[in-house]
Length: 297
Image (cartoon, rainbow, N blue to C red; front, side, top):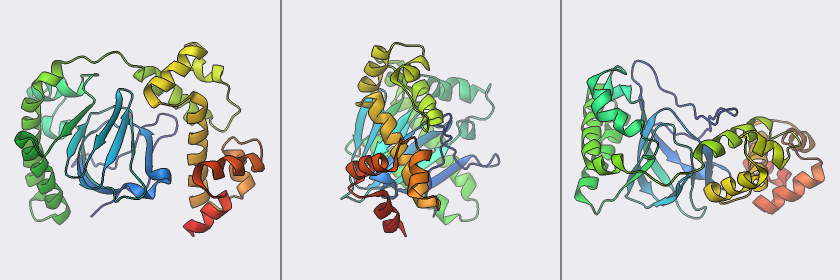
């Protein structure tokens, strides 16, 4: 059984690196969302499509288009190249089975009839970002059962399991395609998705520098006012708050995985002084950076 307990996100692009092999571009993971600071997997996107099933607990997905809560027993789909973040409650179990694969896994070559007729209408639709599978709906439940069966097949790895997985994922996609034909044609209200992604990428590269609001806005060629509106509308927080959260998350990674001093970590993450670093860290996590590192030991 595999578990995605290590964040692998390209800091300059926010792309999550998924470990897939060209020979078999599919993987199943069992994710425990409590291993990350604040039980939050940060903003990211990936080239692969992803289906998932909530084995335990509830998980909130944050997208530029809004927030969506997935309860225990529900499943879902997140499209390729969709910017998203996930968060669960600290006091509750939060275990998710996820199935990640490149569209070509079931569609073959980019110019194939399978890609053109059945896959591209979904993955090339910028308004088709997320879909919830409810166990109370019999059609949805049938897809959830395929996901659960596929997880067992993949983890057991019996002789011929690759063929079984390909068959199940093809069946899953066919049913999903037919189920979502109406949504494939729907158009959502315009969002700030492209702008916010550009600004988040800028922050990911320059978070350790003394950034101004104007610099963040300029990275997406918009005004400061529009920058603030964009962050508030899509992330529910100001650009400065997002920047501080990003710096603190990077600090948590350095505290956990390096031997740098507290002062060195504060400086590396863009804080002017170790005292200010300690103050905002305690306000966010309820403990000092040193205490946080000690708890991880």
